[in-house]
Every structure is written in C-alpha cells, then in structure tokens.
Amino acid sequence: MFLKTATQRLSAFGLCVLGVLCGQSALVRAQFQMPDPKQMSGIPRPVTDLPDGSITVLIVRGSVTNGLPGQTVTLHIGSKTQAATTDDAGRVQFDHLPAGETLKAEATVDGEHLETQEFPAPAQGGIRVLLAATDKSKAAAASAPAVSGQVSFSNQTRFVMEPGDETMAVYYLLALQNNQSAPVNPTTPVAFDLPKGAVGATMLQGSSPLASVKGTKVRVNGPVPPGTTAVQLAFELPSDAATFELEQPLPAALDQFTVIVKKVADTHLTSPLIVQQQDLTQQDEVYIAAVGGTVPAGQPLSLTLTDLPHHSAAPRMLALALAFGIVLVGAWVGTRPPEQGEAVAERRRLADRRDKLMKELVRVERDRANGRIDDARYAARREELVSALELVYGALDESAAPDPATGASAAA
Image 1 (cartoon, rainbow, N blue to C red):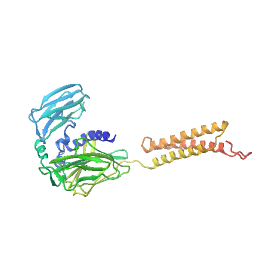
Image 2: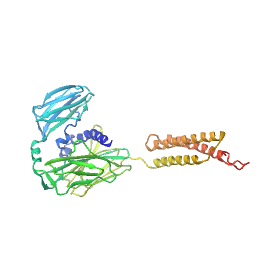
Image 3: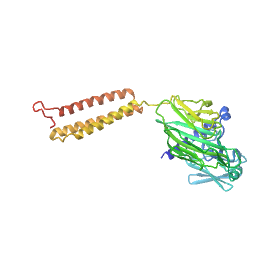
Image 4: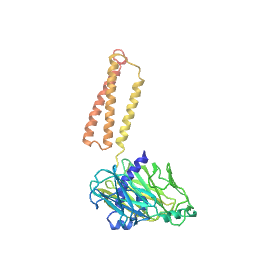
C-alpha cells in the first residue's frame, strides 16, 4: 500500500521539485546541478511558457544538451495517435490537445523503447517532457571487468521532505557515482540503515535494480557500473511535534547535496552542513531549497525542521481515556447479576443512553484535536454532554441504591 502511495506522491510532488530545480533564479541554476537525464526521463513537467494545451518532447542521449534530431515520436491521445519528427535540437511539439485527455508519448532510439508516464492534457499552460536514450559509451564500459575501488554520492543527490498529518514523508534520491571507466566493487559495502522509526520503506520507480531495501536496511549490490547509479527510496517517520530531526549516516562520501522541503506555515530548515538556502515558489506552493557541502563517509547527515504545525496530544489522550472508561463500565455492567421486570428495562435504557453520550463526547474531543470544531462550539457541546451524563449516572445510581425499607437493592 505504501509503495503505491509513495510512488504516486513522489510523481506529483516530483513535478514541483523539478520545477524548483529548474526555476528561473540564476542563483538556483548555479547551485543546483541538473539531475541525470535517465532520472528525469518520462516525467511530465507543467510549464507556463507554452501555449495552452501544448506539449513538447525532447529526446536526448547522455546529457540534456545532446538532443537527437530525426527521431519519430508517437503521441497517444486517448484512443488516437499523432506522430512527428524531432527537429535539429531533438525536440517536437504537439499543439491544441483536448484538455483532460490522457496522453502518453513513445519513441524508439536505436532499438531502445522510450516512453513517458501517462498524464492529462493541460487546460492551461503546457507540458515539457524528456526522453533519455542510453549512452552507448557508458554501456560498453559497464561490460568491462570489475575492479576494486571507491564510489561516492555525487552532487545530484537530493533529500526531499514533505510534512503530513503526524508523519513526515521522506524521499532519498541518491546518485551513487563511479568515476572509473570500469565497474567497481567498493572496498566498503554500500549498505546503511534508515533512521530509527522509519516505516513503509520502498524503492521507487527509476531506481537501479542493484539497489534494494528490506525493512530499514538499504543495500546496493556490486559491482557498480561507471557513471551514476540511481538509488531512490521513500519512507515515513513519525512527526507529531513542532520540531523534526533527520539524521542519516551514509557509507560513502557525499560530494554535495540538495534538500527540498515543502514549506508548511512557518517551517524552517537548519543544519550545520547547509551552505545556502532560499524559499522558492512553484505552482502556488512554497519550498525550502538548500545546498549542503561535502559530508565524509560515516558522518551523519543532520537536518532539522522547526516550527512545524502540530496538534496537542492532550485531547487525544482524554478521548482515549474516555473510550477506556466506556470499556470498563461496560465490563462492570456485564458482571452484574441479571435483573427482572421494569427495573431491568429502565437500567438498560439508561446504559444505552450513557454509552451514546460517551461516544459522542469522544467524537467531540477528536474533532477538536483534528481542528474540525472551534473552541466555542466545543465548549458548549462538551458542557451539554457532561451535564447529560451526570443525570444518567445519577439515575443509574438511584436504580441501584438499597431500598430503605428492606435494605436490598432496588434492582434486586
């Protein structure tokens, strides 16, 4: 379940992150290195510099500047198709697409099939999408005999965090770099544990098949091919306070890294490793974008988020206590000897009334904890429920009180 959720969230969230990385700021372009084309391949990116209902497809090999001309691109528009040939820059554009129709672009480069994710045609603005063919020179190097050596995490490595309701979704987009011309068997195994408390860890689409996660243990099996090996995973950590801390040691040196945080309210990002950061806006959302310096192998990467919105645990604990009280009272009533006649019916009616009032009180407490009821309505409703409960408990006590004349219980 988390695999589907994490993939969907990263797909949607990733569009905004790519927008941040590819934003208009010259400072951002200078600091944030573009991702590996293979990592970007097939992911649609909404833009505002194209006519409404238009998309462009760029086919490249090796780098985003190496466009491939003369390639046939087929665009699936629902059950229909259109085809066009890339220009000298490796780009083709389709216009006047019906808003909301499902789109998917495909191409074949030297026998390699490339395709995009499915996405809806935009009603406003356009879509840019990249298709990256395999660099044959790197493929040939990958078949060479493996040697022993070192690898590192390159400056294409990213850490993405998205605050949620009492959880923090964390995405590691790691770029493991082998700078040699042959595959490398790392002298230190590329394996590490996720932070304590991590749940639902899963590898994401686009990650190398060499990478795997089991529980909270991540491993990259060697040999590592030349160039960049993508290790992309997602997990969740509990986050029910105003401060959230992430600490992650890595088994290889980190040359440079990027942190992207979806900003909620007055969230702030701090770390002794960060050398520069700024707030950026993409699609009406605000993101904290930061650059960190070199981190030696084994040294923890430490990131802290402060001023996160959170709910007090007190109402939730009160609601749990009330629910537990209902269970205890129910158990006590269940152990009483059976009663007869009208007294039995009356006590049952009172018990039902009591249970309904208690459940309603629990619901009101939960609504307040989740911000679904304001303080004035909460106070009035709670006073009303507590008063009604006092009357019911008083009636229950009276029906169970000893008879002054006989000394026996009225319910006996």
